[in-house]
Length: 252
Ligand SMILES: Cc1cc2nc3c(=O)[nH]c(=O)nc-3n(C[C@H](O)[C@H](O)[C@H](O)COP(=O)(O)OP(=O)(O)OC[C@H]3O[C@@H](n4cnc5c(N)ncnc54)[C@H](O)[C@@H]3O)c2cc1C
Image 1 (cartoon, rainbow, N blue to C red):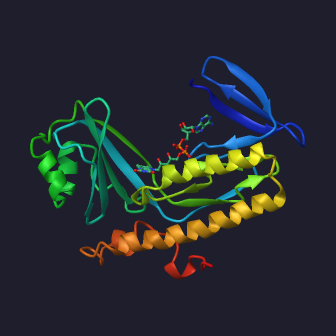
Image 2: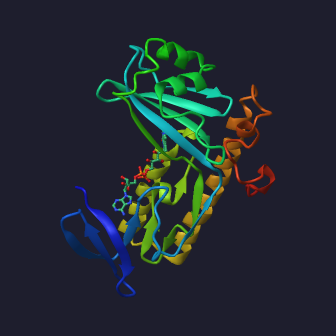
Image 3: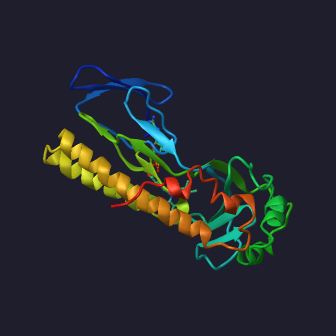
């Protein structure tokens, strides 16, 4: 474990050469197929694809000792975003606050600021009622991107993108993991059948574009369903959407 792909380059028309490092040691390996499953922020200059971002959704999260016996995950909305609270192992919870990166994080990295920002979230406020605003020593903050994105193409003669690097979805859709596993299953079947022809790859891309267009329409619907703050920027822009609804590709 701990090995990172530091460089990926074609070493002939048929082979890839991958340089792996773990901070102490460097190893090289060669492979006939390159399957990239390195997540939504990965960048691979030697693999020929482009990735378009569809929104600016980002998150700030806090890992906090669990403060309630009720460990059901839940979602709540507020003026400038939405929150996802979920239990995690070691008797802790993670509170994810999603916002438009252009507007910046809605709160500072303190429990007091988080509580104040999310005061309108009824369930979260109940959960927070026993937590002191000064309780900052046993909590861990982290942040990241949660944008929707689509790569084109997602496969070449001897390479393929899987999961979020191929297509990333809004966590609100709760479909990212399913979609990543579906990719892995479809591609492994094709590779085992040695069916990775240009036509097969074009079919895969076409069906992905179709399902991504369906997903974008669904995403519009999720954000439109929250009407309490429909005149405020986060909700007007539907989570920092960078594409007009009318520009979403037509289906069928
Ligand atoms: C805040 C948040 C909440 C989410 N909630 C849900 C949810 O409730 N349900 C759901 O279905 N989906 C959810 N998702 C989406 C889900 O996490 C992703 O769709 C899923 O993890 C994609 O899997 P992946 O393997 O493609 O990418 P990742 O899970 O990002 O895994 C990529 C891996 O590649 C590794 N890597 C990157 N570069 C290199 C390199 N050069 N060398 C070696 N390794 C490398 C990374 O360290 C990472 O471990 C959520 C996403 C976010 C951001």
